[in-house]
Amino acid sequence: MSETKKTDAADAVIPQQAAAPEDRADSAKGSDEREVLLRVQGLKKHFPIRKGILQRQVAAVKAVDGIDFEVRKGETLGVVGESGCGKSTMGRVITRLQDPTGGTIEFEGKDITSLSAGGMRPLRRDIQMIFQDPYGSLNPRHTIGSIVSAPFRLQGVEPEGGVKKEVQRLLELVGLSPEHYNRYPHEFSGGQRQRIGIARALALKPKLVVADEPVSALDVSIQAQVVNLMDDLQSELGLTYVIIAHDLSVVRHVSDRIAVMYLGKIVELADRNSLYEAPMHPYTKALMSAVPVPDPKRRGAKSERILLRGDVPSPISPPSGCRFHTRCWKATQICKTTEPPLIELKPGQQVACHHPENFEDQAPQDTVLLSAAKEAVELVAAVDATEVSGEAPAEVSQTPAEEEASTEPEAETAAEPEAVTEAEPAADAEPEAEPETAADAEAEPEAEADRQESTGK
Ligand SMILES: Nc1ncnc2c1ncn2[C@@H]1O[C@H](COP(=O)(O)OP(=O)(O)OP(=O)(O)O)[C@@H](O)[C@H]1O
Image (tube, rainbow, N blue to C red):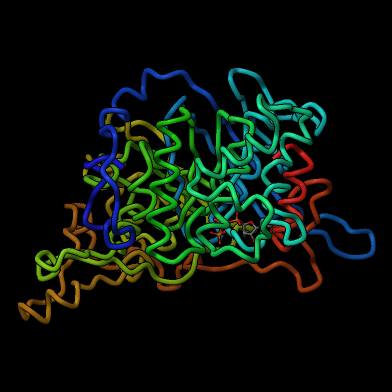
């Protein structure tokens, strides 16, 4: 990890970080000029909800609902967001473990959106996935040797020196002993199992590795080792990563750029430093305020914590306009009616917001806060700050628009209908099972592992 990555917040969760071989800020700077490896445009994944004897589609879970991003060669794109915002679905769709509902996916300039399983087979060598659950993603009946060598068998690849030698080399590469070849997954700890999963993913020297919460199932002390391992392997093998995590500390450590997802959309996409130093989307700001401050010297300092009210609304019927408007403390009428596009407001920082933070208001004429917005967030100072200094809780500084709005009489009717309403599916409505995809694997990670193996993973 680079020294610039060694931040207070990150250290809270990932102690014992090794020094990075290079400064990631520099690599991020250069990333603009790098060749695009993966380009995603208007990507959608809707899971139909069917009902009745005729199984008519009555609604859809809009897990991913029109996202655009690029991943450049050699970079790490972190993807963060609350549970259920569509991160894992996005990961499974870009690796084509699930079929997209709309949009396009280009890998090395080739459109892979509609490739069949057979058409994807050669590409399985280049695109690999690491799963969250190191316990469920390895077949307990197979030896480590058999698990890590599966990609060679399935792709019909004979490595130089033979499969066993290559598997043993891979085991060493991820910090395991070559003697582990004949052992079974149950003989290993969580961290070791995740290393085995990494060895399997790297067997065919992939170009792109999508890691879905690769360390969240591990103990904090082990997380650091696995994150460091992934970082070292990236430098050594020139890998490109998409790392999905709900934990901002992990993402901060590993990413060159970060995409923040909310309810199936990307609300902010920026290089790591810009995002952490001056987040522009209120949702990003709220997520960041939840990252603990580990430095005891800074703990006493006045800081603000933004507690978002309520749960993420249902992706079955997401709120109109900006999807975050039901929980945003800056929401005005335009946020309710008009969806803000994801646009580059600062170099390298794209944001989808009418009233961004740390930037000029994009809808200055719209000054009256929605009534729900006034209650949408509860601001509290860090407990330590109030306890130590006896200060009142910090308030988020208000924009002129907000100040104006807060002094004006309530413009909205008292009952804001959009306030965190969830449209539940009909009781007997069932999301449709994904045919021939890894959707089932969510319930059965092992099946997903088997599928990976059968597709060359
Ligand atoms: N196979 C499926 N059928 C129906 N709905 C699904 C399916 N897979 C995911 N979903 C729904 O899609 C939405 C996004 O799920 P997803 O797992 O992608 O979110 P996530 O951000 O990765 O959450 P987490 O961090 O909890 O894994 C959720 O509402 C989820 O219930």
